[in-house]
Each structure stands twice: as C-alpha cells, then as structure tokens.
Length: 368
Ligand code: ADP
Ligand code: GN1
Ligand code: MG
Image 1: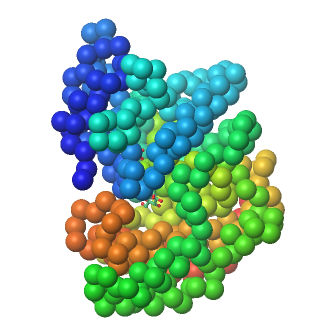
Image 2 (image 1 turned 180 degrees about the vertical axis):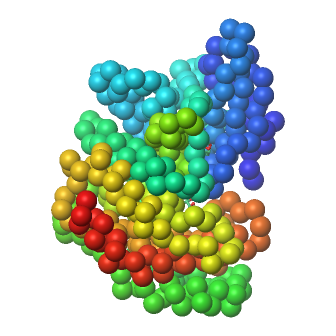
C-alpha cells in the first residue's frame, strides 16, 4: 500500500530542516517510490523538499541502497565543489539528515524514508519535446557517469541484482507465460509472439560484459527522461535524480534507456500506437549530447553498440511491463487495469520502429 500524505507529514518531523513543517503532498510520476513534496517554513520563508518512502518490495536491501546514494552524492558534491562549478547545490542531490544525524529514517513499520533538497527551477519531462531536450538529457547522464568514474572505495552494492540482465528478464517472462497465473496471456498474443521472436538477441550486452569486450562502469541504470531535471529557462540538464539504481553496469544501459524515453513523441503508456516512433533527429541529438560528455571514456565497441542498446533496452523494459502484466501487476504502479499491457505495446512498437531505422542510426553514430 502506498504511503499517505498524513504518514509523510508525521515522518517529515524526523528530518532536521531547521524549520516548521507546513505540509506534505504526493508528487511526481515515478513508478516505484512514494514521493511527497514537503513544505517547510525556515526563517520566515517556505522551502520545498522531496520526501520519499523507499519501495522495499522492489529494493530488498534499502539500507545498502542508501549507503550507495549517500556515497554517490558526497563524491559528486566534493568533485563539483573542488572544480568550482557554479550552482553546485542544484547539480547534485543533497540528503537532509535526520535529527539523529542519519541519512535516512526507519519508521515503526520498518519503512525507509529519505529526504532531498527540492531542485528549484527545473523539471523532469515525461515526454521529450525537442532535440535540445534530448541532447541536454544525454549530456547530463554522460557527465554523471564521468563524475562517478573515480568513485573511491569498494564496488557499489547491487541494489537490484541482475537489473539489466536481459536474459534473466527473458527467463522470468517465459516463466510468467508458462504459469499464466492470472489468465491474461490470451489477451497479449501479439506481444508474446513479438517477445519470443527476439530471444536470440537478449544476451549481446551481458555476454560482452562477461568476456571483457565491454567494460563495467558505475552507471545510473534508470536514465528515463524524467530522471534528469532540465532547467526551466535554458533547458540545460541541471540534476540527475532517482539514484536508487546507481551501481555497476554498462554505459550502454544508460544510453539505451535514453533512446527508449527520449526519441518518441508519445508517452510511455500511449494507447494510440500510430503516434509511437523513433525520431532520427532526437536520436542524433542524444548521440551529440552523450558524446559531448562521454566521448573521453567510451570504447570503440561501446560507441558501435549505441543504436543496438536503444533497441535492447526498449525491448527489455517492454518485456518487464509484459511480465508484470502476466504476473498480475505486482511491480510497477498502475493507474488503470491494462496499464502495463499498454506500456508494453508502446515499447514494442518503438522497438519495431528502431529495427526499421537501425542502418540510419548506425550512420549517425559513425558520422559523430
Ligand atoms: P521513482 O523511483 O518513483 O521514479 P523519483 O526519485 O524519480 O522516484 O522521484 C519521483 C519524481 O519526483 C521525479 O520524477 C521528479 O519529478 C520528482 N523529484 C524527485 N526528486 C526531486 C528533487 N530533488 N527535486 C525536484 N523534484 C524531484
Ligand atoms: C521505473 O523509478 P522510475 O519510475 O524512474 C523502473 C525502471 C523502468 C521504468 C519504466 C527501480 O523507473 O527500471 O525502466 O520504471 N525502476 C525500477 O518507466 O525498477
Ligand atoms: Mg524516477
């Protein structure tokens, strides 16, 4: 069950804002955590904060997750400050400590809560509106990878094991299909056939990571467009958010999810499939933006696989929506009965559009 605003208001008093809490209200369009916009009056002024209850059905070890988040934020802050970056306080999330000086709070039911400064004057967009937005988002995620490339200390915890292990995702889909626990497979015949027809491609990236052809990096792993806030005036990338899945991964996962979420003019859950398509000018903008900040560290093989990554990650997330539909909507938050099936259809339509345009996409990367 989702946390209520009343619960959030009680929990807010655990954090050390140095002011009086005014209100808490549900906020944003994330599929995973319970997010609340919290108003606090500090020295006569109202300030905004983001209070979140971590979804511990999804993140089984929320304390390890928060260890990662705290390390990542501290490292990024230190680097930006050392470089004298302007407005560093807007460029990386900052955790508000609890009155006990902890980075997160555990409520009496065992839920983990954390609180961030609200990043003002910037917005996370659910749908891309211009190539400039796509370029800015990709540049910001590339810069984020670059910032974390020298993260000291032990390997980050894997907050969700095998998160982008596409073959495991495929195996889970097959198991859900075989079980068909909710009798829904019959309603998804074309989608199931689409998925099964692409079995042979699912292991390309994980095989290359295993044999060393692709390097492991610290990556974000959930680079959908609304997980980077763009400046409301300049449209530049301001701050990468949603750090729950920052962990070891492939740069291709991050670029791939940008293709999934920033090249189509349609929403992720659009029901009119005729408007879903991969737009080459958006893809070109993503490549431009990403290479602007990541060119220095990407290997030739990573660059070569950028178009394929767009296809694979879009397929993978579509497969996850389909699996969740078959399993009875147990993972992603839904707002209507066939929501996950609608989301799957949109992803698969986009995969088909990418498949048609792969040669053009490859040419764009080669020219860049
Ligand atoms: P989820 O994992 O559920 O997607 P997010 O961490 O992405 O949760 O937060 C949900 C939404 O809340 C984001 O899409 C964004 O709109 C908003 N948000 C999160 N953190 C901030 C922040 N620090 N400043 C402003 N908005 C934020
Ligand atoms: C979830 O948390 P959010 O809404 O930014 C999901 C991603 C999916 C995405 C699909 C931890 O992202 O993996 O790609 O939905 N996050 C997790 O929109 O599973
Ligand atoms: Mg999010």
